[in-house]
Amino acid sequence: MGRSSLGTSLVRVTGITCAVVCALFAGRPHLHAQGQAALASLSGTIQDRSGAVIPGATVTLSNPEKGFSREFTSDASGRYTFSLVPAGTYNLKVGHTGFQTYVQSGIVLTVGQTATQDVTLTVGQVTQTVEVRATAPALNTANANVATDISEQQVVELPLDFRSPYFLVSINSNTHRGQVWQAFNIGAMTSGPGADQDAGAFVMSGSRYGSVGFLLDGHWNASGDWDAIMYGPTVDETQEMKIQQNVFTAQYGLSMGQMINSITKSGTSKLHGSAFEFLRNDNLDANNWFNNRAGLPLQEFKRNQFGGTIGGPVKIPHIYEKPDKTFFFASYEGLRQGTPLTLLSTVPTDDFRKGNFSAMLGPQIGADALGRPVYEGQLYNPFTTRSITAGQVDPASGLAATQSGFIRDPFKGNIIPPSMFDPVAVAAAGYYPEPTGSGLVNNFTSAVTAPTSQDKYTGRIDHKISEKARLFARWSQTFEFKGRTGAFFGPDNPAGTGEKAGNNRWGLRSGI
Image (cartoon, rainbow, N blue to C red; front, side, top):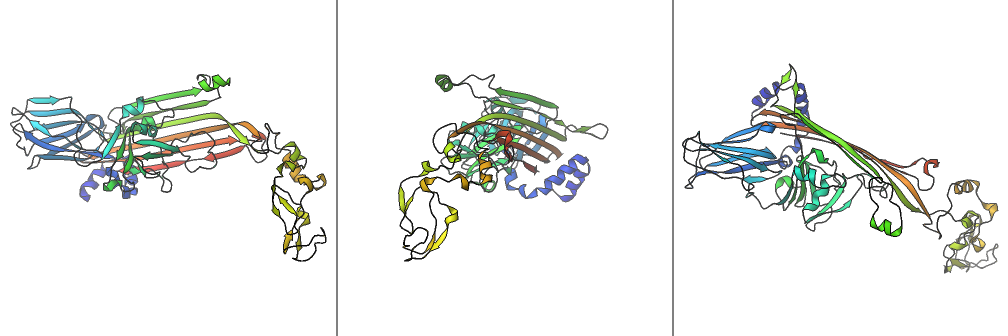
């Protein structure tokens, strides 16, 4: 497209679309190879019943719901090609003088697909129409890629415990989710609920962790360090997913041949929307078999997921009224979850609080520089630290040193006298609860709360510049908070109410 024709087209768009154009060119480095991964192409040969090719046939590919229509004239070899086509369901119309018009509906083009659809025309009048409604899926003869398509219907109707489309990768027998990670937050909340479904690690066809690539609307959707998913689309904003294997073409160069490719929905020529609410809690759930067998009650559980979508044409009364040119789509999903956790910790025993650490003493493991035995778990008096010289007698113990260095005297019986207690340590020890079990370690169990709050937002604008040029821009953001009360002190924790972790991510995508 020449610069002048593009400029002329953009003069007629509204201020809203101008903002989209700015976002588009701000992300221009991603508009080439990776952008093609979110689109499809359809090609084929037009011929008559004898097998002779038909040049000059008018071929039209259309999707009225999304205002898409593109026309092509078959070349001297009878070939036609529609490239950079958004995934969706299309109608194909072929006409030529002396032949009946061919119309085929329900052609499904999936994300990243290179499809072939040959057409055979029958001799007759152009006003006569041959309509094909049911046909085999369009063939992919351009490459050896192996893929599993997950349609919008499957995303919506298949059961999902946590409403993340990425959990549907198990539909492909060669793919499984190895482990769910907490994006940007591995350490603090690993014992908390697995609420951040946006970060996942998938293993495909025996490949190693981190070798699977993630695309969202043709844009790389994973962090560059440990392959965490940056933004996980919601169920209601996902149009289609494709689990691709054996992909070694240029647009998939950041992966090792395995790719999970997703695209989001766009607005259509009609206003539409949806709303949902999913509630799970222990008042509605049945106890599991193992708890019933052990006589244990059902664990407390609270989860609430809610949200909605809206999409349609952009119309501003008396200013911009072109329902077949610009479309919008927006979605929101919220999560509120509260689940108690049982934590295993270590607290001081009653003897430890009194300074009696004799239970820590183990077998002899050696001798010090004065020849005295050294026991496992032995405590030493720091105030008796002194230097000794090899061959000389230590005045404090009356023993001859076998080597030079520094030495301390052990507490007899591993018992610290109360006169040496530090008042700060005594005060700190008072905050620890009494053990709930026996032993020196892992002797305390506690039930703590682990609240999770998550909000996901997506806004998308699609604009048709001409029959051959379209652009879109999408903004997505996740706000997430996870917390956990302290294992020992609960809300009375002198250091605070417990662990907290924020996990906010956003992404901007544009394409033409």
